[in-house]
Image 1 (cartoon, rainbow, N blue to C red):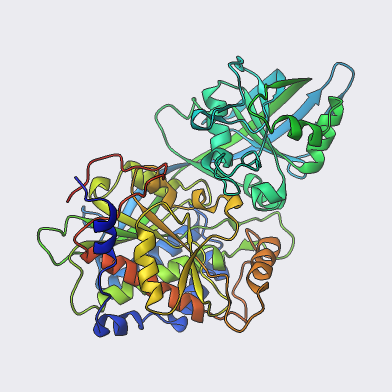
Image 2 (cartoon, rainbow, N blue to C red; image 1 turned 60 degrees about the vertical axis):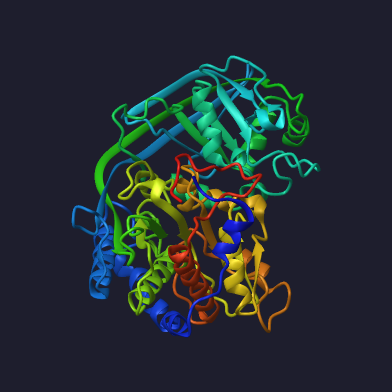
Length: 542
């Protein structure tokens, strides 16, 4: 059994590292970060999509870096590779919605996107009744059920993104998105309801990104983990509508979005048949590929504890290359996530240079297909190289701060585990503070690889850059975040910029290094805090 409460928190926030360890952390440098980013985000790596020459180069680069550091292969079989069997699918849909008096076709991908994750060459949905199901949430702990027992077999579900924006902070965590608001949940519940299709209405604010991010993703090859059932349990069609297309669709039904959104804001909401029929055809080009996670290990020094692990994670993949684009066709993914991989490599280098290895083992894991649904992390969590019930924590890096020094550091999902205190103590020694994410409504905690471990009960720390930039005006951080989201996120313009300043990222990584070192040496494990919905699924050690 684990020890809980104040004793565990005190043990995890005991005196900090020696001066020798601080000097080791200083080996993490802006020059090292930028060197790795320039390689991984170069045109030569073609956007690092799984199943392309860009994957071969990315995996090869990581393996060589780990080998040159002197780290051991992370796979117990003696290799740095964990194979991840994926099925690539490129969906080409058609969509038409009809009322009793008229019908309208929609344009892919400008007005809508749709795909099928079933491993078949074509799916067809004909004359499927369209039902508006509000936010599409079934959450008994909140007394919320948007379905009210209606049989939705074979129907097309039209739903809103995110959680209901209710004034009561006890409902759906107030401003912060819960997993019920995440698009992955929407498709999962539609599958459970045996619907024929699930259509999400896109809105930039509640989604956390513009429609172009969705259309860019669905408009190219996507991936799923290969499964024996060919994914036949998934809803046949998964789709999004642009805001303009949603308005046009609802006008066909004599409805408007704002009035339907108001209806959906109460627990008494019931599904609303719209008097429309949906027709979808989705042709699928399938391509089985063997992708790879890359893992390197630093074995712990304590024979009694070295079979326990602390994981550092960062996804190596990005969106690849789109030959249909005019001009620049390569999604270089410099911030997302060449920067996180660079941080992983710099932290690994710092651990290798420690004079005294931590008592527990460190695993440095760079995973595939994060951009396709956290698939590499999901595969590891379902097929761990080392048991998850002996995995103390996951520290994830998905995008570093390229804009300078900050007074604070953000812990995405702050409040879930005692890892917060470890980070807080390390930050305080540097006269810095830990803050929650500034826009919890975007659901960032559910959008990167650590979440696949969280779902299995492993405490995780998701790093986010700070919000109080030294020497900058108070609005600088939000301005830069908004600018990146609008101009560069999942776009070909996510490239190395001449004005980048990684001094703040370096300080952040040194804190993350210290968190991992302390967890690897601490007498007690990180624990979930009271009120967190995530609990360790298996009994853990001491």
